[in-house]
Length: 462
Image (cartoon, rainbow, N blue to C red; front, side, top):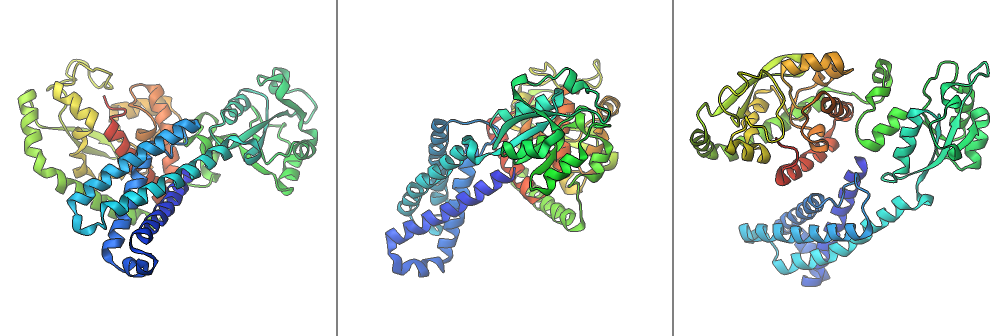
């Protein structure tokens, strides 16, 4: 996640440099100082940077979840440039007095694209070249070790798998891992009796602890020697979290929550988050209220029933609140079935409701919930009490998602499609708890941009 933010910031610097170079070409070096003191120039810089970063994000230039090829990177950058030009042209016509001219912006865009291509190509080369990646040794040969090894070998992230090492018990007996190793035999480097020597011989940068059991097996002395010799030590859940952007719930214990870094909340963060919630929800309501009568009329003409749909949801600290949405189903849709998840092509959804759900128009009234303080703009989606009681019984740590306010959008919503089963709820919980652990301005900004992409392309709605 941090790599995405850093990549955006670096491109923002490139965009500013390209625009200043274009100004120098157009007006001459002598006039740059005067131009920079002009408020029009500063507004233009902001518009240009926002347009190119947003367009690049929209065209998935910064998407780390996909193992893109060089040709795909070039295509994404070019499409991003075309989108940037369209957005800048719209801004130019809406506020011609606040722009330096299409010629300068076009020159700046032509300068920015090669710089961005070079930057993205170098990042792609660095990701694929093993000499630029971190060499990882996995300690363990069981199911958990295999899962970590396959994740490392996917090469989506900047890691190279050196191999696996096994450990015997204190009494010298073989463990389950060593008796029946699941990992490929040719990738087993040997026993951890001389872990430091094995790590130095294979130039290991990181050792991942992925033992199926640790009682009587954990090689404390050898791991400590590696740590003191500058080799990073990490457990499997931490590497999984860093690489996948979600938590490995099946390998996490309550003590992990207690001792892990994260899950920090302070007064400043809460105050800033609330201020942003009020500002965004107030602005959103101000912009959309003129359309409420038209939406209400369309709902009434489409099917009988109320315009707004009210439903109790579970909020912060499991307190119930009433959530507002534009109605997208027929009246009394659950009278016969009771509380059930929405399905794909759900027959209960009206014709207009399908459009509202796909475009997220039905969720606009939830801005009222955000303004009231029942919800935040970003956080885990609020679930119904009937589902929460069921999921708490079958999914470990499910109640932990209620330690913060639910959100209008969230990390799970932009990373995982609509959930309609216990399995989906478990997978989304991985993302929700990751957000709660790592919540902050950087992650919220990334979710905000991802949400715009989801809304524009209609991902995940039912």
